Length: 131
Image (tube, rainbow, N blue to C red):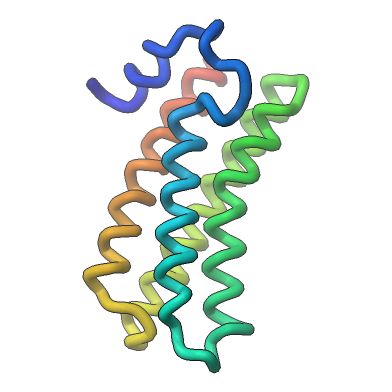
């Protein structure tokens, strides 16, 4: 079953908060993975790469939650699009960390795969709301 079908198979009545959204749950997984990865970064990266990665990662889930809490569909979609932007920013910081050797390519690839899944889920949710 694809991500869109998974989101649509969850009845509206079963979604009581943003925490029930599979896309939010996956975004939280990405954030957790990112926090764990950056815990291993060199100390001289604490005020640069670590903060950037963590901020982007947390922003994805936070914008999904904030959009869900808005009272209009248009605002919800706008926050989901902001979450998409944060996700792309996160991917860029992670790829850079792998390129410069701050993080292992294997660990980064694992998180990037989760980012890809999250991005697909976000796009599907946005499309379903824009119809």
